Length: 207
Length: 336
Ligand code: SF4
Ligand code: SF4
View 1 (tube, protein in one colour):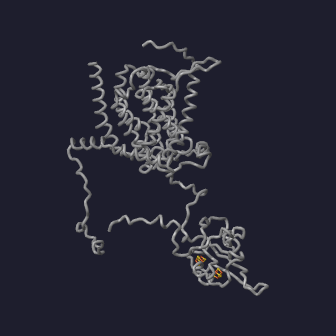
View 2 (cartoon, rainbow over the protein chains, first blue to last red):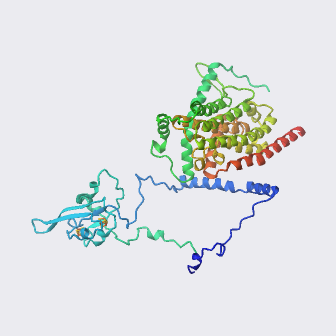
View 3 (cartoon, chains in turn cyan, brown):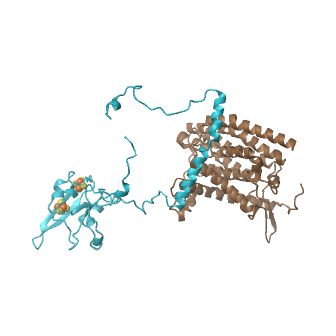
């Protein structure tokens, strides 16, 4: 199928398919007949039945749609880019960031600011690390560039708060040390969602 | 007809009855808003109000607080007296109509020995009185719409007039056939007529359907909710109303729904007679509850009609049907 026929804007030359509609009645008697036939067609009762059936489905078969949002949340895709998390090494519990500065360098809105120094063992440690979430556009470059999988995007999308600073310090983003066993590995860009298999459907349009 | 000897109806009994009706019906009308939201939600597979109280039950209290404490605004160019009085007309007529309707079975208060009748006043033109009062209730929307100096209000009241002109004939004519059969206008006689025999709906199915249709128009329920259809005329006659004045329209509408439910139950569905093993009071409550549910159900399922379609339907389809129904009833009564 070429694009040709979509570019043709001349009304009347396209291949429209007409719906098979009845003619509207012209005489009074025909109108009356139409009313009578529509009145005694059970369509109105089909409508009643459908709503009643859906009520039964919702109440007794667990097909209620409502998610009571602040108390229940829908799972979000692993590709979702929300407030960042800083991950820890699973073995030692030390933060993964090696202070290479790549994320700071690549950030296109220039909102990561970090500082490093040598600690007493002459190892590099991160002394400052903040993200200015007033500027972050959640592009995900920082997570993509990080060689240590240290900075990732977490699932925290509720970012209303009294202060931006509530999210943006290194300690806030770092996995709490007591929750280390719950730390989720970031699947990264292009990751498929965990229920992707269920979501596969045949394309409904047959062209 | 020789009625069983009933205790004498005293003034105290009537007053108790009136207070009872006022209290119970207002409570039910308030509760009805909750039920309506819940049922509509379930039919759309939602949960409805959930957060105030268990399953949203205290939502009523929250709504009440909101309605009572909201600022009562009267628009600058409104006709202030009429604007203020109009909601009271709707609410008052709705309750006055309930005075002549049998709402609960009669009972005697023990110890003080006061007999409380089932009808606050069993006047001999019961049905006419109730229908007349409900019709007078439409002065509420009519005056409200015209008094508020708002174009949506004007459209709303114009639609009130249209609706009023359309359905009132059908209500009267549809109920005329049962009246002919019973030969009385009193609800008690209607009830007694169906004590032994079949329900009136078996003899008068057409009249029943017509009455239900007219009842939907009378209570502004969904297929005919032209007066305040928010997608077209903002809120129609209620556009400028806020707070308790708006709440009074609402209570009036729900009280009217109950009244229509009562009339349908008493005139067509066997009234408060015992049925099989179920006692009469349970039967009438069940019937009224079903009428109420049916109104919500229809609201969830059906679209609403245009004002001209309503007029067309009432005058060109329903009225001839009602007249034919009356004539056939008359002929059959003459022959049998
Ligand atoms: S997501 Fe983009 S804008 Fe935000 S900190 Fe990372 S690189 Fe910068
Ligand atoms: S790119 Fe990763 S390892 Fe390098 S400084 Fe940023 S977070 Fe740390």
